[in-house]
Image (cartoon, rainbow, N blue to C red):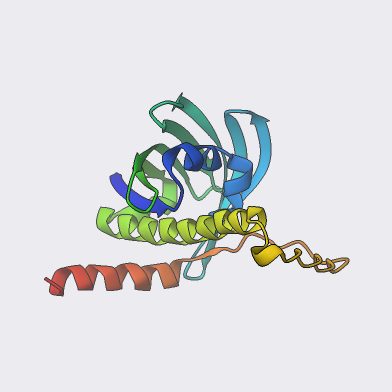
Length: 202
């Protein structure tokens, strides 16, 4: 199945591109995703946790950049993952590109996704999967926006010559935050709402 998504980044393409290509930095912005290994500068291993109602799935897999055009700000990624409990897998080819916009940059994403095994039953409706993907992209975009905003605020000089506040002490022995599983129920509800709005909102 093929579908498209997009989101805005409040940086011009020349500044947004290196951020988007920094996989180690942006991976934590994707809901349910965790980067487990950097094989090389184009190949990465990780996991994606998904909760679909009472069923919790974790895909373990690898993603590799197949094409990168630094000048045109386009890239193609091939990813594949399997559920370790043998319930199926997913293969995807994702192409994304940056275009200049009034807000800064628009990130355009084209996805070609194939599900296999028992998990394929959740992907029977292309429209539903696309709606769910849109929800995930929206969450990712918001997290990425917060990440970029944090850098901008950190680099901004203090106003009126004021000195920067002392950094707050970091609590010791703070447990590591585990990747948050994606709630299939909440995504289903949001996707269904989007479908009804599209059907009756015209």
